[in-house]
Image (cartoon, rainbow, N blue to C red; front, top):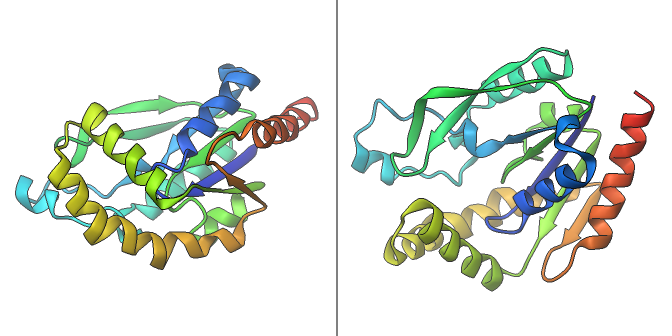
Length: 204
């Protein structure tokens, strides 16, 4: 199994790149794991307390569960991936059954943060985009897809998103095999990644 880890700041284009690879390779050959599904369970906290939680710190991730699930997929076993509610700020009771595949893509802020997961990853990618572009994309996404208001988005960006990116996420760029500058067009990078993945599929 080929594990591709795609890291980068908020709204840098990680998910878009992952979906492009899946579309080209054929979804039947690729499993997608988003780190957003592995935020720690906050059901023990009140809604107001959950809203104030720092989701941009590495401690927001249930690392042991994520590592166990990736290890299971590599071993050829299906997993019950958590489903996270971005309106309630906690896990749902349902889960998604994910089956092992020739290629597994892990995408998320901290995809290159944990040493155990870096060792598992055959291709490590960091996606970059200018801060202003990422902020605009985040505002658009959070309003449209997550029902957030502009004041909450800006407050979260200033207090958590930006400082955590500088402290924890950007430094993981040094672990990347490939750095994608996602300001306008990343077609060449997608073609390279899909070629590498296709070679792996052919030989496995």
